[in-house]
Length: 432
Image (cartoon, rainbow, N blue to C red; front, side):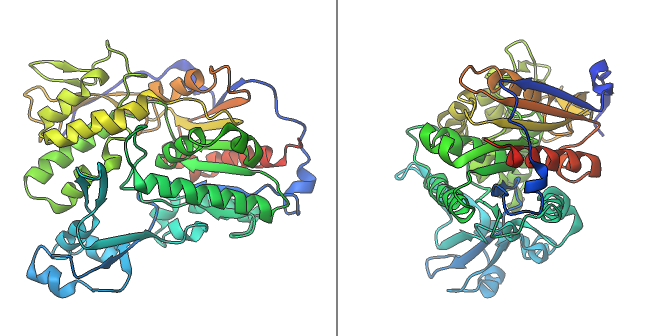
């Protein structure tokens, strides 16, 4: 079991909520007109990783990995690929699910695609119902509690409340790198925002994201014309997303690489996904003097991630794709130049340094813990104040840090959820 060396949390974390505000204050509010009334600005939600549902359809080109998978593979009709709880809990069905869920990189197209013979589609784009699951744990993680709270405030799905699920296996790629999945998502999200605005008297939309959804939302905004952003986006509320990734992602990749080498099919899905590299610690946030992984032979900083991935056993192509597609996006993290509120939990022990002393990345590391939300490190959270709030182009920016609140707790714990809803209602109620 990993040794937990807990650091003392900064004294400032004793405060229940910490606010950092830059730029002009928002205009006066008129809540009585907004809550439950007809003057709501539309809200578009982008959920976290694995919260979007995916359907699949197998064509005649699909070659099943085993006779059992071949017998169970439905041809020519759509079926639920993710989240398929039945297959995930069945050891015999898991290899079939993994084979259909994996991505492959096509060197000719210079892009990721589904396995041959597998077609996929995102379920319920435009609706929040597309990423809500029946399991209470999924509801906590996948914005279910937030949807319920917004509905109590007067929002209605498909009228004033909309959802933008996405293929969570994919990720935005660097400029010049083809990424058909994200390009299609951008087109669909732009059309959805315009539709939501038109349906609500031309009022611009409030985008609200959680976790991985923040990366998609931020890249969407930064790749949209500034004139379009100013016309169609009133506010961006980004919950539980840092500016520079997090150390736990390194632990996850090391475990997945070791398990994949040992024959775990679901681990191969993890290492084949473009999104596996999205939240790796960024050199823009974690400096050259900050060791993230320690071994007897050497220390690895954020600048050494390519060498670390190779040492973990990831294939050279995966390392090259990280350097060409994911790393430039991380280094290009910048303000969305729309009014923005970032909401993050702090005061929760969070992996800060991993010690694989013997260099065996298949073993559990010793762990040095620091501050964060249990997933995102405080360095990544605090960097938002500099990279977004400190950008002279940004204008209004607010950072809300909620003490003793976890990554998922920001959108599910009662007190934190109330604060997030308050931020959304304040953004949507401000009179321009």
